[in-house]
Length: 508
Image (tube, rainbow, N blue to C red):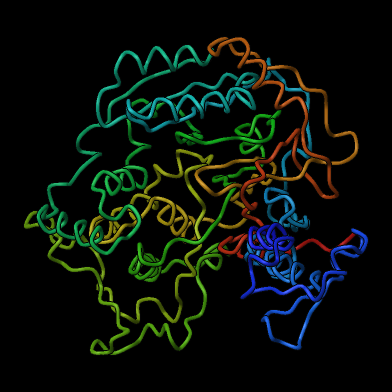
C-alpha cells in the first residue's frame, strides 16, 4: 500500500518524474475527478504502450490482499479462514459408547453438596509467583469459588513467606506447602551422573526443546513416578494438576471429581496432542517391550498411541542401517543398579508398531491417585526409569502417563473433559457454548486481592460470553481469539481418541 500511496502523491508532478511516468497530454489534467483512474500512463517516456492508472494502483492492492489471506489461513484446512482464530471448529458429536460429557452447559453449583477426597496440586518455585497467581485467580473464578477444594503446593526448594502469604490471600480454600525430598528430585544412586549430564548437554547442543535444562528432566521424572508418593498427597484419592500461567475459559459448575467417581473413571484430559519426535526416539520401544514381556493384551486404548510400522520407519532394520535407532546406552546405569530387570530391547520389540507421538497433555489432568500408586503402574515406571530415557532423551511425564494408560487401561476408564476450556502457553481447547436454555445467569466474582477498578474490569470481561452453537457443550465460555482451538489444529490427537472411543456419533 505504501508503494500505491507514493505513486498517487507523485503523479500530479509529472515533470519531476520524466524517466518513470509521462502523462499523455495536458488535457488529462482538466478531465473530471471521477475519471482520474482512467488516465493512461506510459511506463517509459518514448513508449507507445500505455495502461490505465487504475490498473497500476490496483495490482499491488491485489497482491497485498492475497498475502494477508495466506497468512491468516488455517494451517490444517486450506479452504477455511480463521475468523476469529479462537472460534471453535465445526463441532461433531463423539460416540457415547465409552465416554460422554458429564454436564452440557451450566448447572446451579451445589455449594453444600458432597465433596470427593481430592486436591488441586501445583508444582512451582518462588520466582513463578506471578504465573501461579494468574492460575489460582482463573481456577477460583471459574470453579473453586463454589467447591473450595484444597491446594497442595510442592517445590524442590523452600517456599518463602511472600509466596505463601500471597497464595493464601488469593483463595478461601485450605492450602498446604511441601518440599520435595531429594530422593524424588534428582539423580538416583544407580545412575552415572557424568553420563546423564553429558546426555543432557548433548540435547541442549542439538536444540531439543528443554532438552538442555537439567531441572526440566528432574521435573518430568518427578511427575512420572514420584508426585503421588509425596507425604502431603497420601491422604487424597484424587488430584487435579494445576500449572503456573494457565487460563480457564468456561465456568465449571459441577464437581468433576464426583462425576469421575460416579462414572468409574480413572483418568481425565482436555487436550491430546503429538509429542516432538526428537524428544522421545526410544520411549515407545521400551513401553512396547514392557507390554510384550508381561503378556499384556490391549483393552482398546493402546491403539490410540500405536500404529502399524511403515517402510520408512521399519523397526526390524539391521544395526548397520543409517535409519536404525539403537536402544539407550547402558552406560547411564551406574555400578549399583545393573539393568534392574529391564528386558532385552531390540528392534523387533515393537512388534511391527510405531509410536504416533500422541499423548494426553498432562499439564491438565484429573486422575485417581490409587492408579498411580498401583503395582502395575509402578512396575511400568520403574522399567522406563531404569532405561535412562529421562536423561539420555527428554522423556516427558505426558507420554509416560499416556503410554502407561494405553498398556493398563481401557477407553471406558478415560474421560475427555470436552466442556472445560483451557489454555497453557500457545495451546488451547475452548468449547462452544451449549444451546437452548443451558446458559444460566452469572454471579459476579469480585475477589479482594486486586485493586478495585481493575477487579471490576476483570469481572466485567466475563459478564458476556460467546454465542451458543449446535452441539456446543460449554458453560459461559469466552475463548481467546489469538490462537486456533486445538481440536481443529494440525498436531491434535482428537481423531485418535475418537477412533478408540467409538467413532463419531451418527447424525440425529
